[in-house]
Image (cartoon, rainbow, N blue to C red; front, side, top):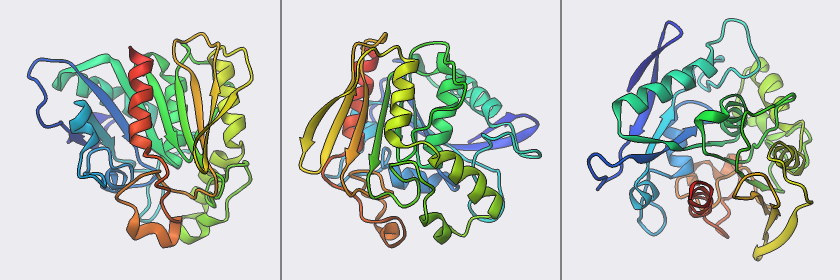
Length: 289
């Protein structure tokens, strides 16, 4: 589908769940890709695709999902403009126009909008949720939660993130990843976007968002399953908590994804210890209840 923004025709994929009741406002998931095409992000996150049990999460929960197409950069892998690169499109304006367009053309509950993303898409989702907090009810990221310098969200925002300790692209500890060399990115994309995403570690980014959310305690660490722990910041100014799932040895993948097998040689094997989409939706339901 197409929406006009900043003098450009911008495209996105819209998924309407099967069985959606006519006239009943639906929750909206905005799934930000790391790189184009948006269809690849659909496969990676798997929110609109059959999972390993054959179920489609969007159908199961009755959520409309939009996956916007990034257009900036050089070569086949295009991305988002979150560093103010001259000559690139204004992607914050695009998100505003996209949300306005979707809410005007579909029956959406504006109080139940989730920003979600993978890798650089997670970085952009983080920045967007900070700059447009009033448009989102929660933020969920995989391999790329980011806390923008000077971020001052207008409202406290529930935040959920997943990160593997073996991620070679956006490392858990915040160092610059070596895996980007295998992507064939342009130098400006590699040096600008990957560095920006990885200069803070997963815990530091989570702690910064916890501070934004007014959380007054250190996180409690809870085992989930073997190899996965959950760090929970509570006593916050929002009803739900801020949570970080740590996947021991996990690489640059979406936990439980059924659509990343062709990329395991590049990104690493998918962790199936947990299913991120199930966790995300449970978190989102608690955040908006």
